[in-house]
Image (cartoon, rainbow, N blue to C red; front, side, top):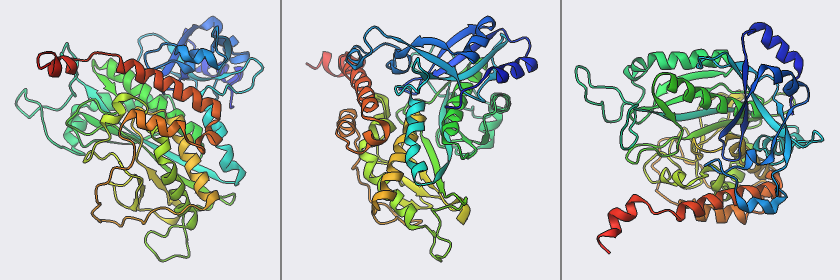
Length: 459
């Protein structure tokens, strides 16, 4: 489980002797970071024995409430579990005024066994499937987000550049414009500095397809759990630094209706015990020179994509992103050097041959997204599943909608999956479904402004 020890704490405090508080970060089932702030007097207890906390912390709904239906899952009375710090995640928080540190944490049972309600432990367990094949996965993530204007507006608006010499917002598509980076230079430089401070391996930054939208990429790593931890830390520091600059940042899947949504793209490749990329066929002269293992992995990912949609699109807003013409995949297709597909094979050399999985929204939980991706890859390779025909570079794609575009349909597919419980665990799948359905039912019980605008007078 890679639990940190007191030596790591002592080394950190030698470097930052004035730190007086620490935020203990726990990722819940939604992908939301929950937090306890502890005083310096409790640091050693955390790093020596762990501290206790309610088991429900990782099973709260998106509103931070306990889902009553979960009482039936042996959670009556909300018993305590142990919270333990994760190795190599202790760092200083540079955007706060106070001298405060942070550390990511995981839940264990009281006897020290992994708690299988914690999404991080679900990913660790899912990786066993690849280890059984003596394979290791190399992963990198890309996250899109919007900066939000400050002020007391009636609805949120993206923080966009101004037309030079005016107070008028710059509208229209301005992909990869340097002026957008210049306008947010101090914010972006603080993000870079915070990434260095917290050992988050940030690489490229660019303005995205919509005004006020940016993408930041993370470096690939052969530790898939760390890749997801880095994604959480990046999201957290972007939000923290945006607040410092009197803005907000959101990774909501579809914050604004007439522009592109926010995606979480995951690049993955597989290597054998000799560090050879098994997705590449070095004997082939084809372009791309892909192996049978890559083709079967694509087949498995395609086959499980429908039943995985509840993970890729976990809440009501997620499905507003899944509309035609918005760079959000609607069918499990794949292709070479083509950004309109769900599973893209980027241009690369044989050692870096990989799949870019483009389905999940930025609101999805990276631990769980990668867990179901692993399920698809392993299922496809072991069952030798063949995918649909590869879409070639530059090919026009006929628009098809075969993936669930509506939340109830996605949850129904997830609930009837026979494959995903083999990787995520049947108990966890039920917990996930219960929390998601509870949220869906509560949303369906609300009377929205649209109800009044459309129906109150007309009916």
